[in-house]
Image 1 (cartoon, rainbow, N blue to C red):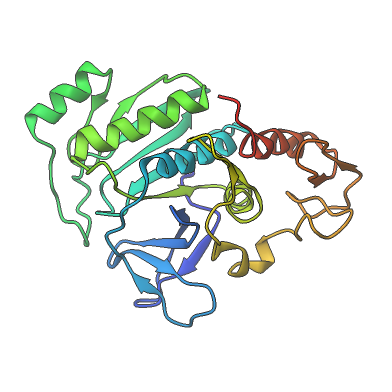
Image 2: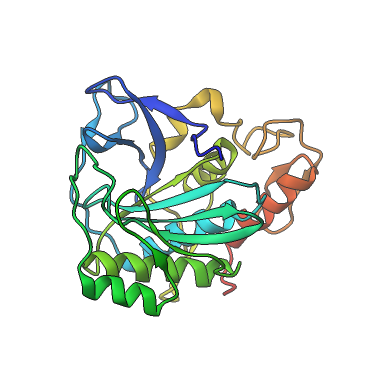
Amino acid sequence: MDLTPETLMPCPECAVRCQVGIRTGGQLVINCPDHGAVIIAAGQNAARRRQVDHIDPEERLWVIETAVRFFLVHPVEDDFLIVQSMSLPCNYVQLRYNANALWAEVCSRQWDCPYCGNRPLTEEKEIRLSEMGFVGGGPHRNFESHDVGRRPKDLARLLEKLLVSTFDEPSDFAVAVYPKRQDTLRFIMTAFSTRGRVDRSGRGRRRPAPSDAAGLVESNVPPSAAAPHVCQFCGRPATRRSTQEGIWWCGQGPCLLALDAAEWTGSSDE
């Protein structure tokens, strides 16, 4: 079992290489075991320490569902996607491929985390998870549900519900998403940086807030779709341009799946 993230950056406070994710708002964030979630701000030498964010619940759900859609593009054994509350690093849930099944996991908060300490769930919370089909838990083991389906919208709502009901998060809590794979992180960055999305209130399309992500790991980010004939997802020469969003892409299978997910972010389809 290989659960090592592909994208790591050093923590500015201790230099330990930590997993990289993206928070609501589009900024890169690293998850340091000793210093918690640290926001990496573009154009600055120093990072910003974790802050208690407040976010529109609609925006939060969009972030989770977008991450889930890209995570599901190319199933790989031991791949995972963590969705973490910005309030506390151990308040997280995750999706993970294991033995050709898609698992959902809820942190037991008993991992001897240097930053959070051990904060076991109450018996009431454990009973509630059991009623939702989760088993396990306890020291150094998460609660697990071993087959949760593959519909992105349903999965996003499930993950959000688990965060709220298990960890008593407020209605406007912010999240960060941490994919294991570098290409999944790149696709999520693309959605934040270049794609418009639908304003569900019916006022038409609006663009996401400017993202710090595009300017930070330039070696890992393909050229923009604004550069003609370059695939927006992998950086290879592009041979096609989508009719819906005008996205240049290479025509390869994995990027076609990514294109479908990217065009969803600019669509009003449910």
